[in-house]
Length: 167
Image (cartoon, rainbow, N blue to C red; front, side, top):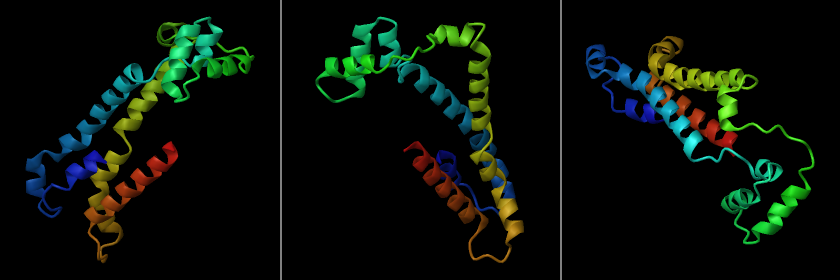
């Protein structure tokens, strides 16, 4: 959506010389790289790598209680931790972050998932933003809305759909 917002300040679609001079392609291709870097940063710094269940099963009760305290607002952390421990009888695979990236068994899956996330960011919305003016103009030349307005409608729908899928 940031790329859509930045595109709102571009010259009119009919002024191709001004569009070329603005270097708008840098916005279209640069923003996905910025977002990919931000996703990786958030993934490794903000989100904890181990769940309370994992910590309990590996005997790290203090860390599990600290993790539960970050997740829940209930002041009785020990009660919640005990409940999780009693109801996590199933055996889980213990995989540390280092093992996920460099271990023989998991590294392929981890790197494929990161590559998918990278290529998802490199395609998607920004392709719509880049080519929508010419595509939408050819599809419906007699429309009351401009191709750029259609692009913003597509962007708003995408934002709404993404927000709904998160919650």
